[in-house]
Length: 145
Image 1 (tube, rainbow, N blue to C red):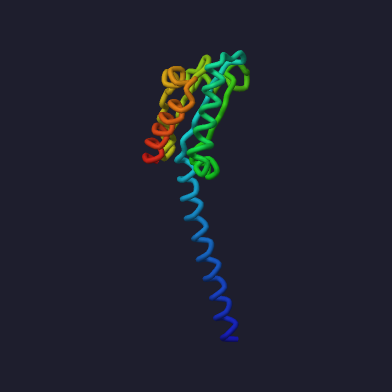
Image 2: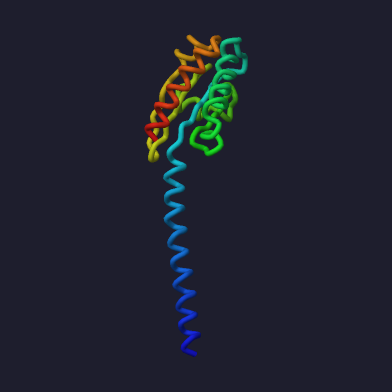
């Protein structure tokens, strides 16, 4: 009988300890998910060559240099047509009315919008220059989160 009581107490203690660890890991997981870099490529339905190059070069840069971060969810890429009704709210949030390249850094639930549209148009047709510079800009932000 005494052994049974000890066994019951041990099992209850084990369950209590394991439940406590799950709560901590979930809190850490939520905080980690809040720290993310969202790369958002806005475009209109009808796109010029440079606009298409911006999307292509952005994907190339992320796939080449940040594949691990994409897989882990530290970096996300969204390609959004501003002319589509379902995208109205996000386009309005980032003040995108046509082609725009935005890096939205989310750290501890706070957002910092970095508008790279001028950079993207200036370098959009030069894959190497675009990729090299975008890589540096994203690395700077990764170091902050």
